[in-house]
Image (cartoon, rainbow, N blue to C red; front, side, top):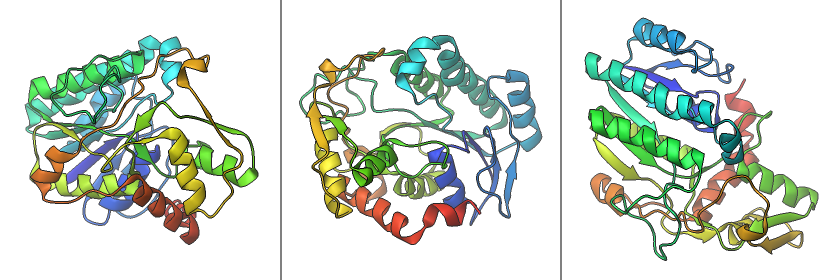
Length: 301
């Protein structure tokens, strides 16, 4: 089975290669190579070059495409809305159309921020969407393409983990600030249900064989504020939390509006797969274990 991964040089792409290359041939594309090993075949190019994207799909002829390429900087998407549309929507159209004609299957990685955040409990897959920013609007449009073409599944999620060393993820930014004792302002009124990127990769490895169609949330078992998540991270890493202060998202000067509640319910996927998901603390514990074992330096050699 041939598996293609877009955005393979990002945090999720890197974890997927580490997980899936043990059992499958992986055809990876991204801005640069991050993992070189047997059964991983790289082709680095800009996905917005649609001709190159078409050629790559034709040359590799993948059975499955995991489409996790994204502009994850939400404020940047407001400024570069055209590029956000092209990456999240147009590339999805091209990939979905190819897979529809070839009989292939897509796993589209979406986001938990497609709602207005006004609901007090965790969001279900069938809850009404109301995205507040360009990032969420264009990712939601990408979902719609996959679901309309019946070419695969869309996954709403929010991940933590280690990224390449020249890109700092949200969890790495928090950890570095806590270690250095730098002031760390975190939202007490923004809730999310993060899952560790390695755990998501393991779930995706299961989904590859099941080939479910439709929309699924994959998240930790309950939500937590970003402020409390920071405190929990300091506790797990046995570090001082004295530099962490709580702020409201409403007081920050940002280009894009953010929803207050992004918590997802994982009941649908949990029932489908017959597994129980971990808590936000469990996700941090995986981060700690990888940090202690030097995981990032090992897999990028």
